[in-house]
Length: 310
Image (cartoon, rainbow, N blue to C red):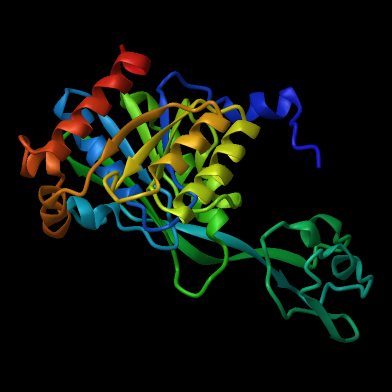
């Protein structure tokens, strides 16, 4: 299968319309410490005098605020457009039913159309109705938040439990932070795990992507999938190895990195200070600045500053 994308698609994917660098933090496998890396890297950049926006785009399970020990503030609703039918105006043309790609509209009787299934808010039914019988209603599918912590601003997206419209929440979250991009020296975007559409949308506009993994067979396998995805969109990337002292599988990660011509940025060994800071909801660069974990994140932040912020 040809996975080569047209140059105009890649250009559109990478273009943000502003100059602030965007660093994506992602990982093919869940549980590798992706959000821990994102939170501590953001705090390390702040410690080095940078104004940072951290975007928690794992909207199904956002926990950046917990790791920072802060509340979710400044809520904004994420609405989904829904059709509202005026049966008095309906001419029974059924164009709206034919236009619905999800087959969610039902005609129980003459001049009567009802929404009986999922609606993705595409608004096709509004556009084809010739008699103005459909108006726009809405329902909430999630929220976005903006919380401040010194030089760090956290933007969080949260999908309402049980719903499936996570893509809408990710899009609303990115729109909110990108509208304020010029206020920051750097934007970090923490994605959900995997290589699905929400991850792609969260990484859109990234200057550089940090792929977080661990030296396990699953870690190496999913790292390969992630690097293939990043290569498809021609995103600059490097690898962060968490739990780097796990025995036996480091060579697998090195082989994947070599196969994709991607550098290994750094490795983080299992660290009691990092674990303690995780439990306390406080970045390790603040809680234990002399720890090896804190020094690793400070060094990583310094590398990014030299490459993208100097």
